[in-house]
Length: 207
Image 1 (spheres, one colour):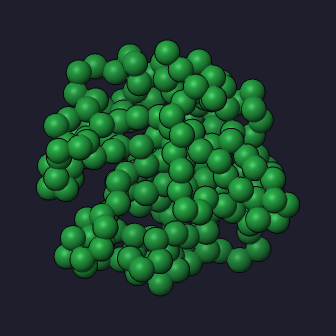
Image 2: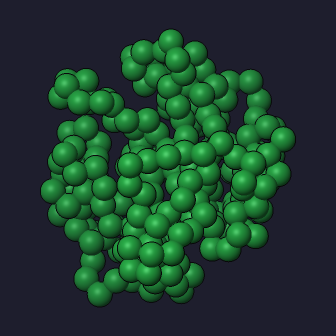
C-alpha cells in the first residue's frame, strides 16, 4: 500500500519544468487571471495550444476562474482542457482540493508517423505534506474502484514525479494519474477502452 509520496513509482521525463511555480500556485489560490487572456486553438488531433498544432503539445497553465479564448470564442478555464479530460480534471480539483498543472487527453498520432500519447492528469503538491495527503486520498479512491477501472487496453496508475521551477531552480513534488497502455495492447485497443476507463475514474471523484 502506498502511504506516502515517496512510496509511489517514479515517472521520469526528459523535461518536466515550469517557469514560475510559486507564482502559478499563488494565482491558483487567489483566482488571479493573467494580464492578457490566453488564446488557444484546437488541432485535428485534439491538442489545445497556441497554434493548434500537434507539433506543439503544451500550452500555458490556466487557473480556475480564468477566461481564455478558444478557437476564437470566449471560454472559461475548462476550455483549456482537452475534451478527454474536460470532466476529470475539475472533478479531481473539487474532490481533492488540489492544483493541476498539466493534462493530456491522449493522442493517436499513428497517421503522422509519430509516437502516440497516453492520457494523464498532473497534480502539483504545494507542500511535502500535501504530496503525502494526495497520495493517500488518490490511492484510496483508486483501490475502491469497481471492476472496469482497467480494460484490456488501459491500466490506470498513480506515479510521482519532480517538477522543476525554471525561475528559481527549486523542485516541487508532483503526482500523475496516468492511463497507461499495457504491454501487449496496441493503440487501437488503448483508444477503444480509454473513455470508458476515464468515466469510471470520474465517478470516483463525483461520488
